[in-house]
Length: 190
Image 1: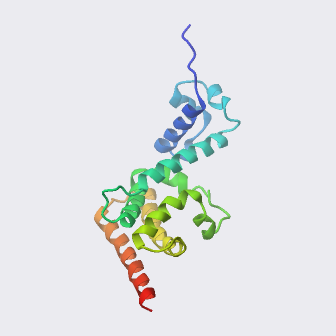
Image 2 (image 1 turned 90 degrees about the vertical axis):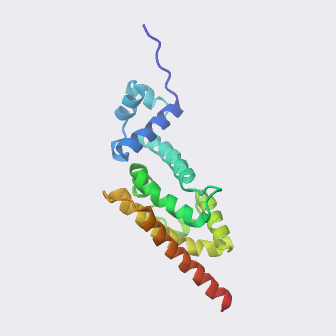
Image 3 (image 1 turned 120 degrees about the vertical axis):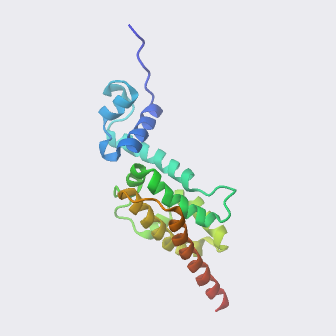
């Protein structure tokens, strides 16, 4: 008799992430995870009480992946524009993960201020603060405008069979960015 496969908690989370990434969050269930792992459903639910617990762990993994995907690289000329463009590119390249992270009512009942307090947003606000050369309080105000434009573009790409035009997306983000800079200069000169 062949040895039983030892399925760890981490393996279940990673498999869930891949199921969501490939087939969408609406297709995540114990059977799909078990199929991905090549085992029965029993080891899948051994470390988790429910599939919702697995979904939450997969969400954390997807959120970490998203953050590393969108963060600017040291070689990026303008980190703020790179951040926005990476966010849009994520919506295009990782449609299922984008919808899982941002279109499953995870933020239901929260206001925009509460989103800004999310510790996962800290690195992004630091990049924006550096790019705009403003303090964290001011960058929080600016973030919402830039985020709404980038999120809108990413949502359009994640939810439709649109062609991704990096040059066009970059130009739109640059226009918003330049508007924010002009607005900032107006405050300094006033």
